[in-house]
Every structure is written in C-alpha cells, then in structure tokens.
Image (cartoon, rainbow, N blue to C red; front, top):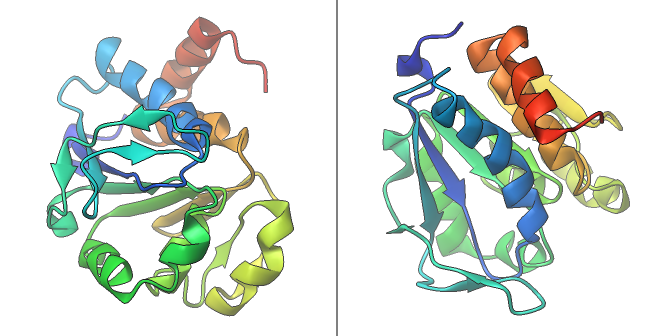
Amino acid sequence: VVSTQSTGKIAYIVFSGITWLDFIGVYDPISRLKSLNYVPDLSWDICSFEETEVKDSFGLEIKPTKIKPNLSVYDVLIVPGGLGTRKLILDADFIGWLKTAAPVKYKASVCTGSLLLGAAGFLNERNATTHFQEYDTLRPYCKQVLSNRIVQDQDIITAGAVSSSIDLGLFLCTLWAGREAEQVIRKKMDYNG
C-alpha cells in the first residue's frame, strides 16, 4: 500500500467538449479508494481553466469545484479527453496553466487528454497512448505511441479510448492501494474488463 502522502490530492481537469465517461470512468474506482477506506485521506478537486460550467458536446453540465488553481499543489493530475482537446492544444493560456503541474508526482490522461499532456511538454521522450483515431496527432508529442489500453512511462500514465477510463481508474487503485483493493473495487463495480 502506498502512503496517502503520495496520492493525497487529485486535480481532475474538465473543459467544454469533454467526454464525460473519460472523467467518470476513472473517477468512480478512485472515489471508492476513499469510501472503502483504502486511502481515507484522498481528496480531489474538479478543476477548470476559466469555465464555471463545463458541458460536453451534448449539453450535459458539471460545475467545477476550482477555477484555475495552481496545479503544482496536487499529487496527481488526471486529464480526460473529448473533442474539446483539439482546440485546447492550440490555446497557449490553457497549456500554460497545465504546465503549472510540472512538479506533480503522477500525470494521467484518458483518451485525447494525452494530447493536452503532450502539448504541455509532459510526454517528451515518453511512451504514451490515446484514442486509436488520434495516434498520428499524438506522435509529435511523445517518443512512441503504443496501442495498449494503459501505458505507464515513469510518472506519466496514459489510457486509450473512452472505456479505458475504467481500466485507468483500476490501474491507479492497484498502484496506490494494492491488488487486493483493486479486486474488491472491481467486484463492487461488477467490472470484468
């Protein structure tokens, strides 16, 4: 079991054009680390760069808990994907904000969230993955694009397309609380993936 000091505070990044399953799929198993008392001091913020209301492409809305916090104070950064990432990789202000996460111990992404990690320079000389239709878009940002559902390269952990968000959540459960905790959480979710 990893101490809670190394995984104590998570920043989930949200933005307009997000794919909510990318966020919820990783959020659900991780939230169970706290509710099942595996990592009781675990906490998180849902962070937006400037939006007080974030909508996906279909209008489903979630309100962030923090607007433009200094990301360096977190232990973990989790960046979901979605169509909104295509504009954000070109948004210098947004990418500048993401770069404040440079000292964060773990940086993770789901789907095209890896494009944002790449645009911020976090994937330089690292292996990574993304949505299979965006492999070519990711290539300039990283050492090598892999087709695995989960790719860990040191402190960077990237997940493939949408449903791999659940796999990423369970992977992080194993990393932070061990295989037994991950198996309990997997069973409670009735997930056989």
